[in-house]
Image 1 (cartoon, one colour):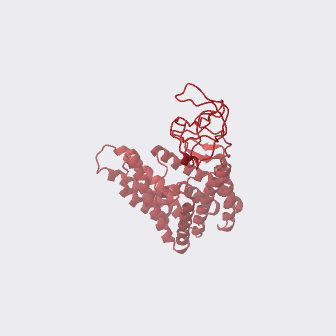
Image 2: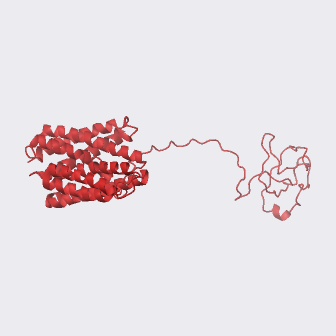
Length: 374
């Protein structure tokens, strides 16, 4: 008997002996097995459809188990129960369900980011209103860690070796001096720290001296000097509330930019620097910060007024956005996403200080102009 199109031989038999002129004939191939016939279902006898040219022909009226029942039907055998077809016929394309719309992603672990943010907020507020000196220490520690992250990335990505030891010692001293001696003390500490960077680097070979000290002086200004304005805010009689206003407005600005930009953002703000930022997000930052500024100036700052808060909120939204873009520019030049991995869901300390650092002198100056340094 012929091999079927599925690649397995079929065990054939004839139907009832009362039909067809080929009575009693057995199919070609395997011998007829009467025992097997008792366990199989009789096949119907069809008119002569014998095709010639094969190796085996059967008598007229005989059923060819391996051939087609109709001339326009391709030759193939039934698969046995449990048999997997080797070359199944393609099924017509079934209508596919429409893909579910993908939700926008923030790109970070939002749960971890919220948890870390709340934890940091508790530490900052507790130290701010319990013992001011403890808060100054928290700022100094943040400055040192931020300098370590910045200098480490510069060395890893650009081969720039800004001296960390004078930067860390001088940076912490700048924050403490700014709190103890005000703006004059901060300027003096900054000058001495920059000088220490120049001298410290002389102990190494001269190759790369200029780029190393340039990066070191930049780090002195970018991290500890700007952070010193937070310590100087704290020296006023209502210093704790001024610092809290500064922190709240910056956080609210970032939150407004994120929420509005994520939901409604369409037009890129600075695609070459930070593709994720949109003009709609900036508008959200301005709106949220101005509303929060009016409330904070009216209820938290001595002799403050709501209209001053509107201006303060606007300035904070602009400075925080520029600070974020500034660090994005640095990270893009370095070819990195985050400055560190210390804070789950946030990145490094510098990734949280990016909008705070340039905003600190803006808030300090406007508060001095509005209500004095008192």
